[in-house]
Length: 257
Image (cartoon, rainbow, N blue to C red; front, side, top):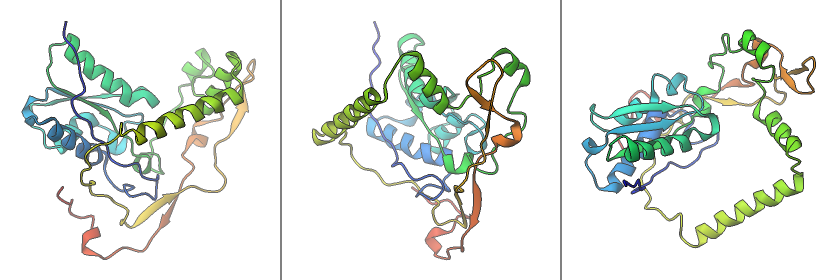
């Protein structure tokens, strides 16, 4: 029986949304940098990769048009490498890794890339496509389908009688395990050069003090739902910043890795 093993890993640091180090970095470039490093660490040629599977919870804007394929090409892999984008919301990246393993176990592939990418800064902003986001026919069938995950968590906690102190204890245990793993060197990885970032661009996005999201009660339900499409617009505003004139921060030409 075939086995699937992880032979190398790579990831970029996590930046703050809208004002972090990668707030103006396109998703193919952001993820492509990590894929390039992972392939190099594996010690293989790029043409040995048969598929590149990338998870993304919001595949639009810079993450649209099959971002997995774009990531593969941005990583310098040859055009012979296929790409597949997976959207399973918060578990999209994990599902991509699991699917990559399945490609090896059951689909006859030998080398597959699996990972995830998400740019909150470049996707969840004033350009986010909210047109016809609510399907009223679907709402008529499943009235809570558009419930946000925070309200979903409340429902799960109530349904399975999970107390807050139990959740806090579990969260603390998770943090302690991560801290112990760091101390034991479990996360030790060879560092690699950070990808080009866009914090020196001409604008940034910041959150307003009062969000615009609103709720209303559904008949026959104690759960809130979205009021209307117009209220689903992201609660963001644009703040213009002075242009930085340092040559190293010009965004007209992409930097070389």
